[in-house]
Image (cartoon, rainbow over all chains, first blue to last red; front, side, top):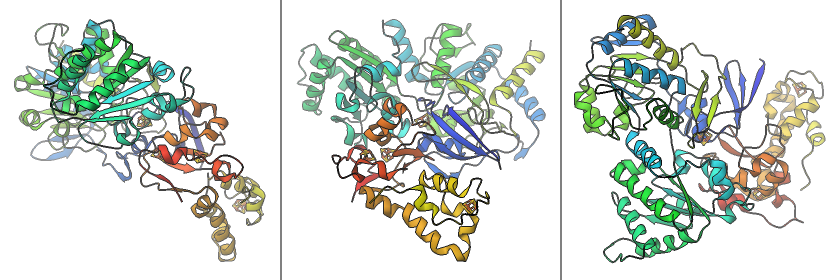
Length: 432
Length: 153
Ligand code: SF4
Ligand code: SF4
Ligand code: SF4
Ligand code: SF4
């Protein structure tokens, strides 16, 4: 009954990648764990998010679908997956925001070899953000810089208490920083969201906006900054005016935006306007802008695209070398796709039904540790070890800092990286 | 109420140093204070002849006493482990250099509040400012908790 203490482990749950987690393991089970939030502990205990006492069902054996879903071995499953992918004219490689960097890289190479499409989850919002960052002179500010300097934090279209629970205490509002020695007393928080939530209690201003009007609010803020007339704006103009006044008075502001901006409106338009607003603000004071990722390695897959293709857009290898795609999301072309390789994501849950309905029509190869809505539809399912708990890897924090993920538990399952590697090797051999 | 001491708890243990718990009885008492183990982890305390000792140990260590000492009522159900209370508690800050910058306290730092298994835990109620009548009344953790998991009596 010997216990092993792993100190300063990285939590592989959200984009904060907290690196201060102390895990005590006994008989290959997590016995106790310190500093991790409730979302993180659910991951370490293989339970439902925020419900650490409800186990998630793990896929135990590789499965293939004939008339019904049947268990098989990895070898047979690999052959079937390779057949599906080889036979496809335009496969989609999708998900990957919950995989380590090396797994992401192999998946990109599979897409390249198959002349397919490669799209990370949530691409529309992220690609437009990174593209705009590249076009302007902005840089992705390190979270430590924000902690040390920010006197105004704005959360737009996200609720950090749910998506990244420790973000407030570790990086933004509450920690003391070099120039902010009194922590939250030296900072103000604004939140912009569609419904009042826990953030209301800790925000100096909570602006409730109607669904689909975020970009209009951003435009109105810009007009106010330029001293233009805003009479035609019908919402809560008093709060907006007040916020804008304070935004120009601070010495360092940080805006964190979340997936809310794509779930409730046109992601690309929202980002365009938000970036323009930040530009306008930077004419008066210092402002930085960062996405708040709720998957742990969204940042990694974008870094990969920028490094390999010099372009943060999803890659379309069917027309060229993938680098010239200028669409923020390729899912508009989903009707052309005739097979999909999905890694660590549940598109039947996360995509709107008009998109996921198209996926119903095509064979799906799925790599995921758990039963999900997508396992109900997939033709081939590979169970895997959970990266950062049962397998090592590298992930990039929301601000682009690379961190090493440890393995604290032994697993009978291979990592997603090794399954992807196997698929790649076989494609390479049979499909040179 | 005086600070709970290792010796006080030791009085209620079997004092055999049999090490079935993995420690000596004194070591066991020490870990009871830091809330790393429960009285029930000593097999002898589960026997009928120790039932009074067990009840007393649980009383001394229980939430009722935490409440008596600090006036803080913790509802673990509501807590999501965001760590805001851990970061804002000034006693934590004095006791752990990491807590100051928002990191979780180190494994062996002797703090007042820490996140244990995804939830808030008042590990050393005696060090809380509220337990010490001579220091000013603090309510930072309760006031800043976004989920209302900490309230005052
Ligand atoms: S905030 Fe995110 S990375 Fe940090 S402990 Fe919670 S889930 Fe893990
Ligand atoms: S098991 Fe009980 S009696 Fe034995 S050493 Fe531990 S505390 Fe003492
Ligand atoms: S009341 Fe003050 S001293 Fe006591 S735990 Fe809360 S923040 Fe810390
Ligand atoms: S008690 Fe409140 S502030 Fe402390 S970790 Fe829990 S939810 Fe966060």
